[in-house]
Length: 457
Image (cartoon, rainbow, N blue to C red; front, top):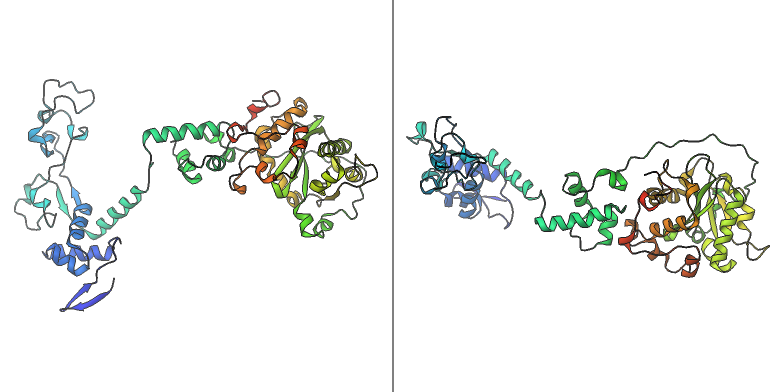
């Protein structure tokens, strides 16, 4: 607002339509009321319409009720007092069945009555909507005292803005429908991010769902939300001695020296283990560019088992060339199960031919294949660490886990699942040969109850 001299008085130009009144303007209104100015005169000074001034004073004035006298009949403070004929219906458990509420002196009925309307002094119901400074009845007046103070009015205005943006902007039926839809999917192991992605007409965002859950509006508990689950501290086993492996030409620096196109198409290999001492674990092959994962059950700590599982994938692909088109570059850690790089690189369908190249991360640096480590999150929701007996899993069980994980919508894929991102890179016949099938998002379960026979519930 711009101040311009006009007739010896400072006048504020008309504010832009739709803008809120500032504290400075409220101070001018307070000063005008104290001086006895009319609403039109104040409106002209501050650059707003007269209705804006009257509405501001009426909405943001301070109303102070007089102190309550325990022996007084409080019902007289209601504007509907003379016409009220309610009998014993305002207070819960009221026994005064024969006494009208307005005549009752035993309870504060005005605190319970839904029809209560505070009776105001007629002089405060018109401009300036505040008690006259020199009112002769002020000392013994029983009406609420009204005044307008700029500081209090500004606080009241900001509190109203905040409250208008809080709470739940849904009807009871809409909220019940939202709760039923969201809780059902959460109890199938879905995160709020995935739910918003797979149910586009949900009507709320991810942040709102978390706010509703924190406020207890939704039925799901913290323990049912994947990202709020507590992760146990990782236990490291003592390193086992083994023969030294010559990784010349296959280090992480050699991997970084590859052309960008080859690095972008890398497949990251890792193992997902169960209890210490078990004979089985899961081989994870993460197709980085497509966010797709292939899980295969294998013998724990055996490089021969790893080679055999890669042979199985090559056979499912149908040819060495088809395998090489997808798994041309493998990046693995230095675990004993990946020691036989020659066997992993050698084709099982065409002996003597190479089907892929194997590269190794640096020792103790799993961050170099962090994407694979991070994408174990979904599998670990089905097979939690410290609760899963890998020896009780079958090949079909692991394939089922793979189907559910790859059918799960991901926020990083814009709400699509890895099957969508795969784009036919791996033929459906090859996936079917491995027992992997796409599921409807509503059928996806990422909870231990998917494998109750192998996971301690």
